[in-house]
Length: 407
Image (cartoon, rainbow, N blue to C red; front, side):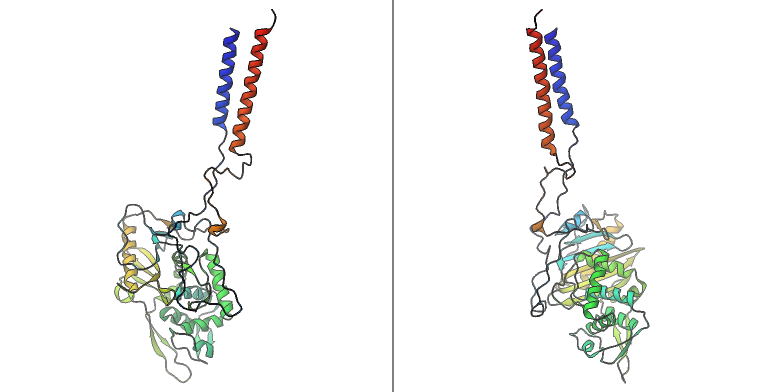
C-alpha cells in the first residue's frame, strides 16, 4: 500500500510539472524587421545619376541616404519590391516601363495595386506639388510677386518669366502646375523666403505628411544632391494636394493667359498633360522629366463615382507614351475597384518614427524572447526541471524512510 501510494505521488509530481510547463506563458516573439529581398535594388538610393547635376558644391559633403523605416508605411505589402497585386487578379497592364508605380483610391486612401511602392527614385517636376502646397499655405492668391533676373534665367522647361515682371501668385501657381515652369518655381520659392527656405519648408511638409522616402533638393525638381522620393510618397502627397481646391483647380486648368512682362502682351499657356485630350473623366495631374529621373507622372480620373489616381516613376516614352501607360493603370484600377478587389495597402498609415538602415537592423531570430521577459523561456524550463528533481528527491527520501523505519 505504501509503495502504491508513493508511486501515485511520483505520477502526480510529474503530471504537475508537465502542466506547469504547458501553463508557462510563452513570451511574445520579437517582431521581425522589414524583410530585405535581393531585388530591392533601390531600397535606400535611386539608380546612379547619368550626369554631374547631383554633385554638391565644392567643400560640401553629399547628403546621407534617408533612413529606411523598419516597418513600411502603408502596410506589410508595401515593403515588396516587385508587383504588389490583390490576390488572384488579372495581371497588370502590358507595356508599362515605370520602375515604380502605384494606383490609389483617392477617397479611401486604399492602395489598389503597386510596383516597388517604397523603391527610391527621383521625382523630377512632381516635387513641384510640394512647392505648390507650401505656396497655398503661405501666399494669398492675389499677392503680386516681382520676378528677378535669376528667376528668369533658370534652366528650362520655362513659361516665360521676365526680370521685373509682376505676377499674381495664382497665375504663377497655375503656370507652375500646368506647364511645369522652372522659372515660375524659382520665382515662387523666392516669394516664400528664398530657395533654401522653400526647400526646407517642402521637406518639413513631406515629413508632416508621412512621406519619409522624400527629400527635395530644388524647388523645381531639377536634379540636386540627395533628391529622392517613392511612388508611395508621391501618391500620398498628390492625394493631399488634390484635396486642396486651389491645387485641384490649377491642375484642371486647360489654358491660361500669362503676362508678357513690362510693355508686352499676355500670351496663352497650355496644359501639357496629354490625358486631357484622350481620357474621359480626367481630373488633372503633373508631369516631369530629367535625365537622371527619366519620366515621372501623377494623374487622377473619375468614373462612376470613384476617383482614382496613379503615380509612375522612372518611366520611358517607348514602346508607348507615359501618359498612355498612366491611362492603362487608371483603367486597371477602375477594373479592380469594380470587382471589389482587396486593397494591398493604405496611404497615410504612417511608419514608426524610428528608422534604421538594413546594416543597423539585423534579422531577429524567431526564437528571440520578448523584451518584457528578461528571464527568458530557457530560464523557466531550467527552473521547472530543478523543481521537479527536488520533488522527486523528497519523495524518494520519504519512501526510503518508510521502508527502513523500525516497527
